Image 1 (cartoon, rainbow, N blue to C red):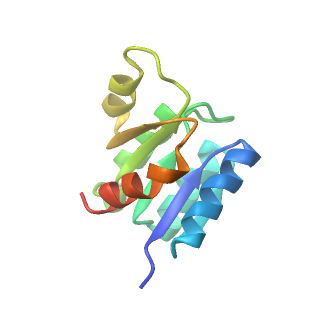
Image 2 (tube, one colour):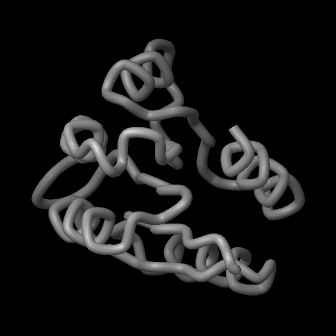
Length: 122
């Protein structure tokens, strides 16, 4: 059975790149273009991993992570912030909001799948 990964990302180019890499690697991908849609899709489909942008319309990534962590069915699903927020303290803020990890943008296509595999296996 394929692992299911939910990408919550509002930038179409970033969404395309993440989706392309993941589908080429054999994963089933769900896509949400804003935070509220991401929370709904996660609740409906219970993905194996959530890749979450922080700068999102309607509901920012920190709020999304907190909302997802309130859902008992999603409590063990890894949420990884994939973000250009790379200032001191940004990683800690994402982790405090409920994220399991942090990947800086721009992603490195050479190492991205290693990072995804790591979070799927934790």
